[in-house]
Length: 167
Image (tube, rainbow, N blue to C red; front, side, top):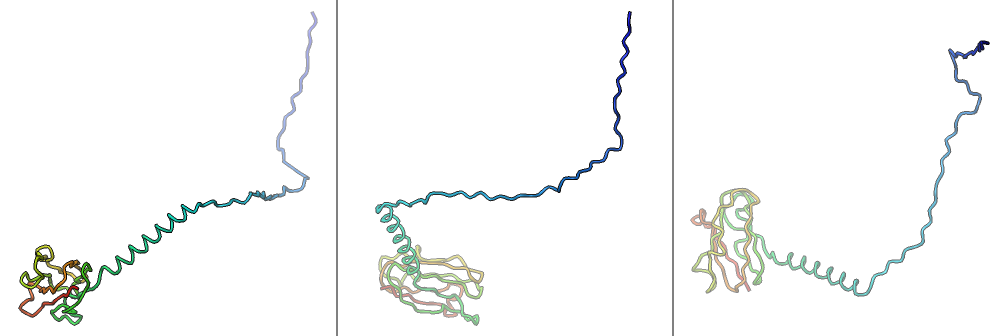
């Protein structure tokens, strides 16, 4: 029998260094231009009318809201004086009057039931709870023409009263 002996040599690598003689890599930037066809906005006349109506309604509401608050009355003077400032005002029917606590004394607004137009219920108008802090407010809307007299309950004896004429 014959024997076959083969010599196989396996190379070994140790201490390899990566060496390159090629030029360093270059960064290349590119831009892509996309061209789009123009888009035409198509709005019908009906849509424009609806938008116009909505804008008109919104602006009218703002104007009405602004004119609805006809007067502001300070409860207490800037110098701390007890009183309503101004003490007498005139407004149109349906307009609102805002009473604002000016200096922080406890104030309220009570309408005199004997000094309001006939048929007006003062309980619906009164704000008997005290406004204690500066800036606290109460708003009332008077719808019936005539003269309304009111006072601050804790300071009525000091002359804190006023009147509103509604036309």
